[in-house]
Image (cartoon, rainbow, N blue to C red; front, side, top):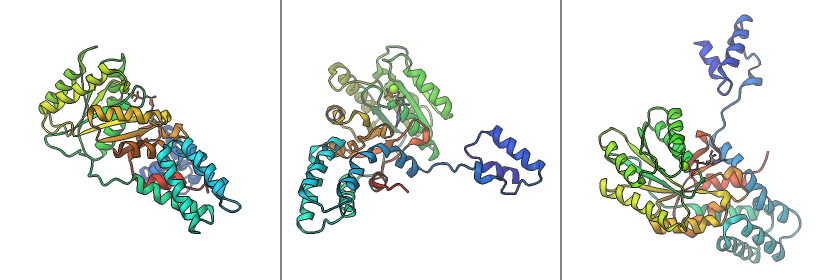
Length: 350
Ligand SMILES: Nc1nc2c(ncn2[C@@H]2O[C@H](COP(=O)(O)OP(=O)(O)O)[C@@H](O)[C@H]2O)c(=O)[nH]1
Ligand SMILES: [Mg+2]
């Protein structure tokens, strides 16, 4: 019992290392002692820490410019112009960048803009407002089951996101089924199967190579009807918004699901790679026209200084951001929360 408690302290250490340390401690008769615990205990990172770390590059861009531009001396129109330029490059999109700076100009005129802290406070308020949607909960409790379709261009993180979402849903006690409707790329099915092994307790429905993906989706729905799953996640092949045939194909997948399961698909999420920057806006617009997206998942925020895309794309599409990804591990995906995101964006290093 005591040993178990001790072992729990080594959450991130390998079992072998934990065993060694426990054995040493036992030999010395001080299992319950603090024995160098400070040295080896690594608290698991909280989501906020992951988010904060993930946004560090973006924070190094236009966010840190708040300090470097406005930190010393008076705040002037010229400084606001410089800042506006940086905001535009930061992938907030021209509209949002101009709105933010116009508001700062107004505040300057009214005498409310004296310090970098004033600038930051105003920006934070505006960004939170911009990103806050009045939307209902994600539909994961539908009967007999919920269907979520994942769409997007190639390599953005659709399959990984499906795995991460499954992990989140499993934590909520949901039983998940994965449908491998990416029949286009060799290895796509295997990738899903590898994830499912890591996840455990998930069924993967797959077709054969080059089977019409819509018919794999059909099979998935039929199998779900015969089982007790709660959530069906449909993985699809990556496609460019300009590839007419492939865009027709995704519409067909959605249509087949609609026909065979009333109310489904309950969610259609487009996964967007934040490193794509502003190009993602046009891509997302085309997907939205084709299949009427219910939400966006923005991934790879850890690999870009263009985290402002979250704000820009939300403005352009008016589709809620539902999840954000900040890394390749299961834990690196969470529900999107506007205040938390903004807080992490502006967090100051200790
Ligand atoms: N750094 C980082 N990598 C990610 C994230 N999400 C996915 N990836 C990686 O992006 C690559 C492509 O992911 P995949 O799920 O196969 O993309 P798909 O083609 O859209 O299905 C993989 O190497 C993933 O590990 C993320 O949030 N951060
Ligand atoms: Mg994939």
